[in-house]
Length: 627
Image 1 (cartoon, rainbow, N blue to C red):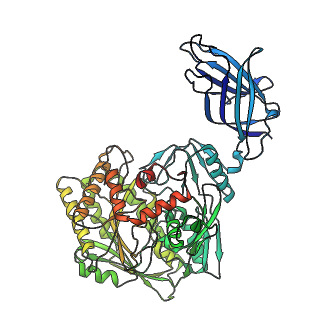
Image 2 (spheres, helix red, strand yellow; image 1 turned 120 degrees about the horizontal axis):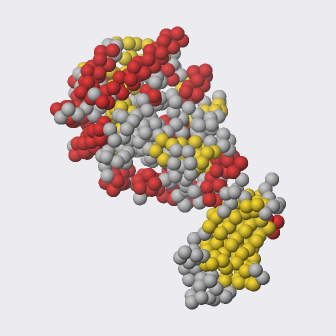
Image 3 (cartoon, rainbow, N blue to C red; image 1 turned 120 degrees about the vertical axis):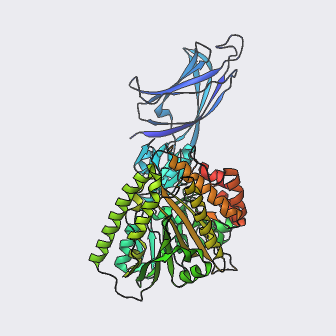
């Protein structure tokens, strides 16, 4: 076994003025490499920059080398010149002379010799380096992209930890090498939340689940998928109050970015978290609950327990690496789910819409553009009525998957033939049953649609806003969206070829939730309105630009009409793709976010700076948003 060292600094003290350059001080630089048995070890060579006219140069470094008992470090010093470099002297360092304990920094001084002549001294600062075997599997320079192909990047190193201790060691390694760190779960976000050019932690193998029967709580690592936990829920006859439709996504991603389900008395996923286990920038583990944290960080930094907890449950990974979430669950009484069609005019009439939405515990509303009906899904407590048989459920899932596959192939054709979009959406609307009623377990009622995560170039933008007393702002949003689609259609442009969807939840306590509730209005209802379309895999295809233009225009129309929309953090409100308009320019977006979130954003940024003072967990995306 060798020892790994990290060379952090080299200083020269050249005693003879005029060496190298006759008329001036030298322009020194050095070359470093390792040898064993008089053979140079491949991959160990390092050449420094040169320093002009300096007898006492210094270099801050980050050179890591693994040394064995017979390893020798060679350092040769040169005087840089145009065309030819003059050799000045060298230092030979046997590995046995470097005796370093873990985390201790040592400075060694050696004579620089030119043959037998002493020309100065070299000081080398060394600390114990890092053994990468501690961090678990990893790859270097493996390109990544997200679900919707809006983000593509090349991390320096991607780690695949499967133990909590791997996370700690990765953070320590990042600190040692001064690297930024981001985490990625399923990569289903459209914005640059998980992009990192330094270190990327892929949490897919952190998927342990622990159950507390007495407290009705489940502890999950960030790589646990919705599908995995749904199996536990069905076996235990438990459920979570609200959840997302997709089953392939991981909880580490959907909780930390504020994802949601539907339910007039339910909140977003982050609000079902009762404990966040977080690994900080210095490798310490802290557990954060509503009552406080076990390291006393709140007291130390003057942060209230509520603010610290409400920042941690929806933090985008900006406070540290999440090792686990503990979520509160409840007994599942099953769900009566009713599918039916309503006339589009119901959505455009505020009073009718309000009546339909508030009849049920939760609703989802889908509209296929250019049609005159909506698909209205409602959810109510089934009071422990028996769910449909397993065979019926399997058949339903198979048909859902087949429908998604057929839809995927058809939509790919529509990308190049957009004038056929109205024909396609009318056909889909015809295939939706006029009325269907069934009792399902809560997980089966939520995860009713299969295969939609296979639409790799699907683009999704979602906006959240508080619903006014009479639902007038909701109907206004719909009316303006439909009018804008009609204007585009007159110009032979069809920006939406998939669906417009709407859901509702109660307010959230998470500081950065777009659905944050005012303490004076704890029962405030929030609307989630999103539109989805399939675009070409070629980002220069016209479908991208038309979609971007439509998204920009509808956002401007809503804002100009006083509707206080806030974008979903994980969805594509600012794709930053060449040739595709952003919904807002970066400076305009920053001002809008600060105005909209106000003190909550300020509080979150202050907490972030206290817990991560060097910004280890911030990437360029959040540096821009938080500035």
